[in-house]
Image (cartoon, rainbow, N blue to C red; front, side, top):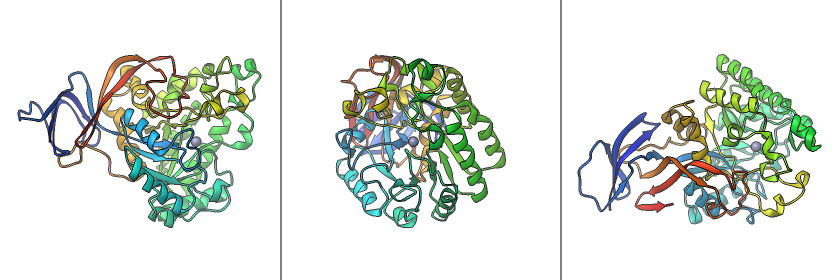
Length: 422
Ligand SMILES: [Zn+2]
């Protein structure tokens, strides 16, 4: 089959392309990207006004399988990914059982091959049972397909365990993904510590819970020269330390999620459990600082931290509600606001969503290079629409964006010969 995508704004951060052009696909492979391709095709897609890009790589996703399939499973999670233009997913290991053995890792890959809409790359645990004490077998986990190590949901509190993990992971060329949260400081916290926590009478999480963890991990990465990735950064106090680490040449990357540059703690007002997340939503100053960190290149990855929960976990008292929100289907739309605000260029944005996350987990950065399998997203950066439960393909609907109007919509996804229209 010959497929021609006409007149789109072709954006390829891997090749550094940003031009109005056509993309020609033959039998599922990219044949060429050029202006005004005139060939006969079996199907022509008009991409006027749309971005044409290689699919996103989301390296912070909770697929909930095995063990919590009422919230999400590999099939529904990857369907949501496809709907969001996320064509490669790295999933976090805090499943039940956790991904702390090669067997669980292999089972996820096998299930994804059978049921998944997009490829799934498992992240394995740093410590057995995520208990923070004994390291897992990094070498065997890598052989089974693990692309990174993380105890996400928990910080490795013991500094010597984390130090050993960074050293040991370095010998297997695996990154350590830290969930930076000093649990001694955040314990029992429900929302950001500040005006809102006082108003609602809820225990607050201070910024230090995050920054103490960030600083320790950066120091350990500096000493060990291990590869560190800091997940979901949310507070402004991190910035000077990230700048310092860049100057020192520390081997690290940092990530944030769209909710940390779109929403503030006030989303939780009225005890809105859909906005309860870990780390918590912060203040307007933090939102501005996170944008500044993106602009400065201190934060190089945007991930969704897609965390599905059912009404069982969310339609309860605030203090009993599980933290987290879904995000796969909103990652590109919400991130595209950074371009509309003039903060970064479209190509820079796609580095944060495609090239950089691919590099973190050590996979080939997706591109529109000739000969590659066609995995292409057509995105309208200007379309506005209401987020409804019907729009959401994920099994869970827990997002504070429900009922809100957002801008930017994935219109079509091409996976080799298949064209998905949304
Ligand atoms: Zn986390």
